[in-house]
Length: 103
Image 1: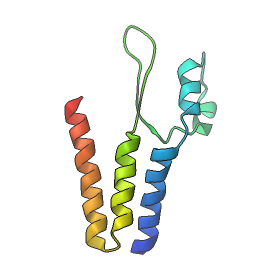
Image 2: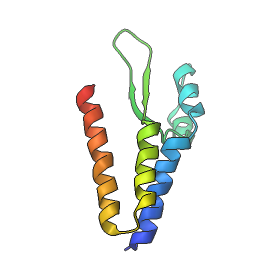
Image 3: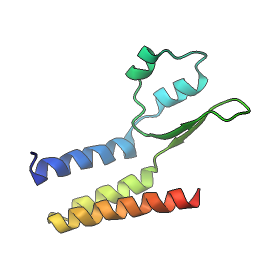
């Protein structure tokens, strides 16, 4: 089992990838003629929240909110207590729920 510091570091790294990660592979996916499963597995789609193929054709790609990821990173960075850590997780979950309700 991981200690709190290791878990916190992993969470911060995840938020950092969301906030600063690239979108090149998602754009490549959007414009590709054909994608094989082997090629798709090699793509970095960490920042992709949702991919849809509407009935009319085409593709829609929705990314995670970079600003919310930065806010969660800031909240985690300000607090060193476990209570602050859980508060930041709750704030992130609440933000995601608000986003889902809005869409």
